[in-house]
Length: 288
Length: 331
Image (cartoon, rainbow over all chains, first blue to last red; front, top):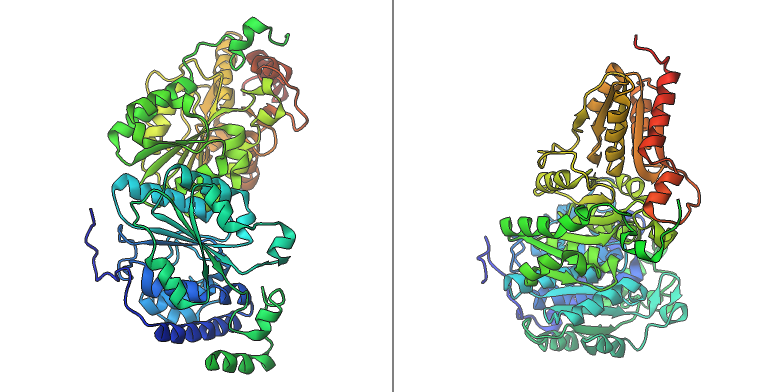
């Protein structure tokens, strides 16, 4: 039974064109550059790979109520790969979860917005993250809670492909299949790189769709930079009442949107663009 | 003392103790909580047998996650973030030590109202090998910000602690020891966390116990009273928060302190009391009865307690020795 929120709801499947989303992608990538420069350090390439995923979720797929962030019937979003919070902050500010001035304090001591998200400090963060491998389990708990209360919200968890190497992810995947949590959606940002190198060089995680299917999930692959494909995949999700959790393996490129970062994703996993490169990179994004 | 023979295997946890301890109380206490509060759900990692009665009464409010303790803790966090009050049943060595990072990151930093009932702490599973000893849990958990760490000394105090922590904002860890079968409280005490009950008044020395340590301390006090020693017994029901005022009373009104715990001597109750004494600049002779920081032997609990001086007789010796050290006469 849906409880009325204290403010208007952004419903699922909101109308937005691919062209509008591409504008937002340029805006978000530029904001990521700005915030990381302001902070002095940040995860560029891991954030660039999931820009389109975050935008498709927040401007199209998720049912939200930014002025009542704890509204019980909202769809949940958990940023398993918490190190890309810098890509989430501009979106939450734009949707009205907190004043945009908060962004200007990003990176300074005592700022609410940090490198990894803290649910106690920031409205709109459904759960803290930072320690990889935890959030899919948290999502299982939230999905179970929805079932127990007869609510129809969905729980989305964005995982890094390196994060999938954590054993707890598979404990959670097993539990989600066992409890038939069709209200749970895992999206893997499969950008093929982790902090230390190519993900599959460190430890083979592929074939991801087959592995999730073996744990009782419905699993699909999608081009994680193609808005039309992402929206089609999100629109095609089975209803939350269905009996199988869904995994979308988003094929992405680490550093996408900045050729130099895409060519050497490791170099830009964590770093700071030197001043002499900043304008060139900004122009490249603006032109894209 | 010999190792168990086959016919004694059934008593391998408690060796002859009456089966009316904390393990037996857990299911009934959880039923009581769940009847009063529809937010209460119970989770375990393959510990369903311990709460069979609860599962029967509330089949839709019990969730098993198989032998996957870390996942269980993080799932509980998700349920708590959605308005539920999860109680997680676990075996102390796995539910506490293996899950320390999930407890810290997903429960404590986030202030999730999850309660962990960690059965068979200390050397209750001493027979099964050092993998099954849980002698570091107090040290690890009390170092985590926002944690509440409690340890009942009998069944009524377990019920009292459950009641007093029902509405606690953050996570609570229950350290459940064996050897706590004898009731020390006539009825569930109303517990103020951070206020340690006084079970025996006395002015010579203060014995502070936790869990089975309190049971031992009470026996020592009753035994030595006949020999003319007037011992105060304090029950450290909460290891976090501590009761600084009670420690101050011990320093001001008695001649020294003996702590008793079934835990490594590093980081447990004795360490906690020593920290307070040092930080406050309070001077008092202190004896810490605990397990040594060395490879422990493997054996049934009764054997291990005797081996490492966690018996009323051994603690009485320590107490008399401390009394002699303080002069052995009243001022």
